Image (cartoon, rainbow, N blue to C red):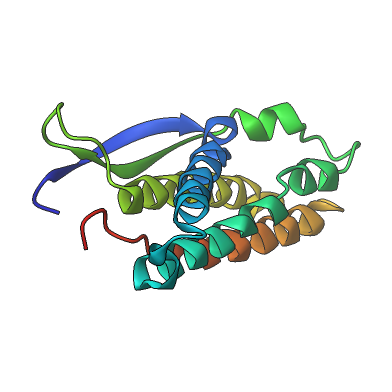
Length: 162
């Protein structure tokens, strides 16, 4: 962590529930796999690691935030827009130097932090509204998505040079 600093930033739930970075990481690793396929590198641990990373990152396709929005009952007094506008603060890692780019591992970690922070914000917002009919299905959707996202936490990326 010596090359990174912790930064606290404020987001809305709508901003936090974004898988674009995970998809970008998957595409990067898929590019590695495609470029190594059919070469002597195909039998290396780097190839296997990249292939495993692609497989794990493919789980993001199963994450559907619309499950949360679809579970919000129409007549419960809470709107989807209200939930998307909830603000939360989370700590992310950024490079200390402007010339340094953020590693794949930290990019994934930051994205998981955003998503889990947004899900926690929804859960906390609805905590005192549990008695409203249908809110439990929203909380169930939040829990289901959180478990899918937490599975991404163990992805290992191959190093560029070793």
